[in-house]
Amino acid sequence: MKVIDFETYHTKDYSLKKMSTTEYIRDSRFKVLGLGVYDTIYDRAEFYIDVPAILETLKLQNCGVVAHHAHFDCLILYEKYGVSPAFIYDTLSMARMLYGKEHACDLNTLKMKFLGTPKEIHTDEFIGLTEANEAVKKRAVDDVKSTWEVFDKMRKEFPGAIEYELIDKTIRMYSEPALLVDQEQIKEFMDEENRVRQALFDKTGYTEADFASADRFAEILRKEGVDPPIKANSKGKEIYAFAKTDQGLTDIQTINETVSDLVDARLAAKSTIRHKRAERILDYTKDVPTLPIYLAPGGAKNTMRWSGGDKINPQNFPKGTKLRTALTAPDGYLIDVKDYSQIEVRFLGWLTECDTLLDVFRDPLRDIYVEFIPDIYDDPTDDETKTKRFVAKQCILGLGYGMAWKKHVAQLAMGIGGRKVFISPHQAMRNVQAYRTKFNDVKTFWEELDRVLEYMIQDDNPLATVLHKGEQLFVCRKDEIEFEPTGIKLKYPKLRGTGYDKKYTGLSSYNKPEATKIYGAKLTENMVQFLSRMCMAEAFNKISKEYKIVLCTHDEVATLIPEKDAEQHSKRIKEIMLTNPKWCSDIPLAVEGSFDKHYQKF
Image 1 (tube, rainbow, N blue to C red):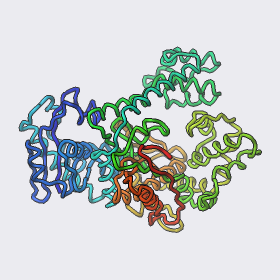
Image 2 (cartoon, one colour):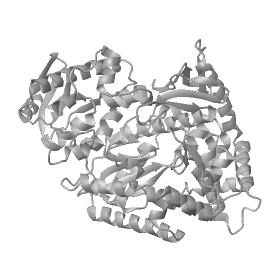
Image 3 (cartoon, rainbow, N blue to C red):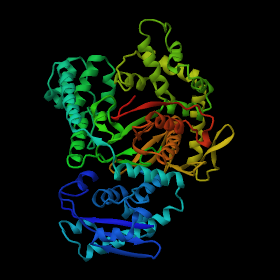
């Protein structure tokens, strides 16, 4: 096994602090200064300036490679030198899985945690260097030795082969990209986005400039008889609550369709994220046709799901758009896309032992959404059956984690499920009550987890367990929950509070301490999403042994299959995904999807 660390040229403006990983590596200014290597067998660390020569000697294609942020080092290996390691270990991904959002996972922090010493030299000292000096060499040698020591410490508590394989194959989606990009389709997507944005402004009768100004948007709301929502900023000064995450803005969006459209126009005027994402994809692939797919294994807080990165987050490419279909398979291959149908709802029923839910899924001819319509409407067979099924679907998908009626109204009005529906408070309250009555086992489980949280707060925690049909599934200790089948732990550090006012401390997206509320229904959501992820992870690893996976989301996997006998290969992938993990052998799974030359949702 070898530990590697590339040292590269950077300036104040051209650096990983200012640019995404792909943008930095594929920039014309990119230059390798040298490669630090630690040989774990001979306990020897060296720095090499002649990188091609040492790579020829090392033959990394025949051994495992360890790196901190292996996405970076392995993309350089593959794109600049044509080297694909036999196996990829990444200490950054390992740290995220072990410590998650509760702990900074940079090498300096990990070195302090395990070794008690900080990095001796910081990269700021090397700004503008075009050749490696002694300080660069010393830093590289120090980093590879530290990376190995950190790896050696973490692997003693890391949960085993499944996660190592997951890290390896996830990083290869990025470091050994295979999806091609049709730049013309990306440009067409950008044009369509501009037309959609403009149509939204035209519908309201106001201009983009009107919505971009907080004062002018406030006046527009007043003309509609709506008081603009107010909040206090960090200095205590009252300002308009017009941010996407502000509850006040969400509340007014439920008033009626006209106000909802005004809010949408305001958000469209203040955000160009989809347009910027498309621009980045064009930039990333202007010289190299393949798109590296950056996903962070275990990056999602308290669920261990993949999180997106590289400033494009491929998990959120909008369905039914050319941003998706612009991704194409190389010659001789097709993209097979399969997803687990209603995987969260199925695992919710399985975890809570709610047979009322599971019995429907055990029969492929039954429709859970249609069957819920009579529970929430007095006349389920009128002309609005399609709309009522949509509302019932949002109930089944959204009310399993304790959602209250006000948020239910808001999500429907905001079009979270793909279309806007406005319902009365009375209807929303009926929906919530009907769900909790029909699926009472789910509600009972929330209450059970409320009691578990009480145990987890205690210093002399007597050890609480979550069982499934009498078998131990989760072991709950102070500030953490361990998944018994694999040993993975979900962290809830500094858990505190009483009753329904419990919180734990994690890190915000800005790496600052942040209090997060937790309660039984929310913990249910964490567990369900974690279990769904574990099911997906096992299928992911099995598929990757036979095919190249090029992209995945929470419930979907995209795989390259040969054009020849494509139907047979597609059936094989579905067969793998329908094979239950041993720890949930009795859950009824369902898989949908097909294949095409382009990446799309079927």
